[in-house]
Length: 125
Image (cartoon, one colour):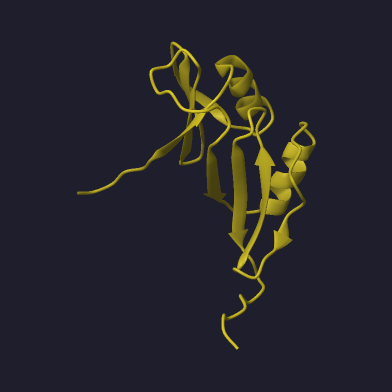
């Protein structure tokens, strides 16, 4: 089997509001819309937004995704200017990534990160 990509599905209270956030604030593009279900994309990353009338029933706001990207600091500045509210600014972590997390209006978590220039700490004594 050859895989070609994937899409995380976030369950949202209102597809229109979620689309406005992902396109207007996070800079994604609308890929499709089918009833109470829509897809957005940024580069090669797709996120599907499933509204309450969709057949895929799950609790709203329980999803998360981590997106690997370049220039995490530049992207952070860009989306802050459009109203995003990250949990904290980008930071280098011991696991070798520089990243930050935003929460969408429904509580789904979207992390953005790139490899940091800092050496990861080894586990152990």
